[in-house]
Amino acid sequence: MGVFETKVGTWAIDYRYKGRRYRKVVAPTRKLALDIERKILTDIKQGAFFPDLDTQDVTFAEIANKYWTLHGSKTRGASNFIYTYNKILERFGHMKVTDISTADVQTFYNDTWARTSPSTANRMFSLYRAILNKAITLKLYKGQNPCQGVIRQRENPPREHYFDREQIKALLINANNELKPLLAFSILTGARRGESLNLYWKDIDFNARIIRILKSKSGKGREIPISQDLMPLLLNLRKGPFEKVFNITVPALRYSFNKLLKKLGMEEYHFHDLRHTFASHYMMNGGALLDLSKLMGHSRVEQTVRYSHLSPHYIQKTISVMNGVIALPEPQNLQLEQKQ
Image 1: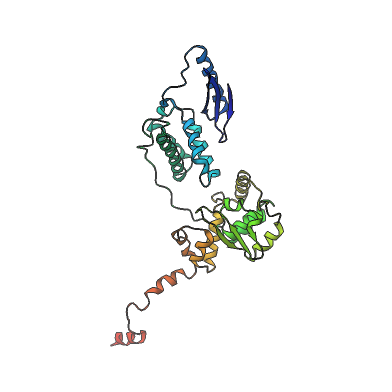
Image 2 (image 1 turned 90 degrees about the vertical axis):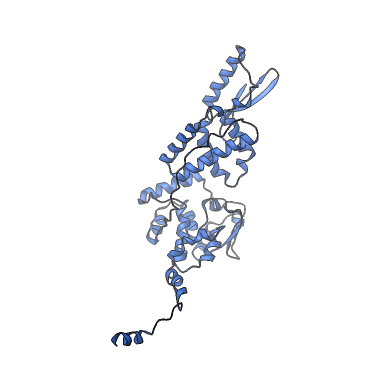
């Protein structure tokens, strides 16, 4: 027998019984997997071990691992997806699926909502429900999905925080040498965090002054022109074509950026607000909405409309469509009529 860690961080056991080999994901931690291994050994010695019970005996960790192998690991953004996956495993991985009730799922949802936000709780719930649905489809589990009947909260409206010029200046002055170029790049391009961290020097065409995002959240690529302020920054960093432009991990970035925000008293902001900062300043400086939509890589122009109110000419432009709808007397004629 043996205990080993899977690719997604869960723990499994590997053993033989009556000439047949068994490999099962059993727990989210090594300690719990070792306890289960010892229990199996004891049951075998006592003649109380029955490995071929109906699929109703399956643990959540087993079906979650199957889901991840067949589907989850192949989805776009799987690297971000894994955090949510592991949080669910921590709570339900050791449980038999048949022992998980709707009340258990509702309690997990409520706790997540209270600790984080409705949007985070809803993402975790959606993943949990998808895992159970896939298990039922693959006949790994017979029964109903305990997610049925769970009451969810409405998500908060989208945040529209962005850094003003003074805040941008403070960020760049106080950021360390590793973080500073990435902050400037994000503010000047509007690229998403994942797009920036997955960018290679071969994706930047200095002759055409173009940054090529090969794959974005929408699944499509796009091109971002290199601005006058961005060009010297990139030239100063430039390395080999197959090296990453920004060689920093997500955890290291999160730690450094949050530390910087705390130092500046800006804890209410997030890294994604740098993208909002690009869009907001683009519109405040007279940019066109359709052009911004293309630069941001939005799949629908409706996603870009929320920045339109920042355009200095937006209100005047929108209301000007009413010009000439009705014919009013000239101002001087109106005054004469009033005198009469």
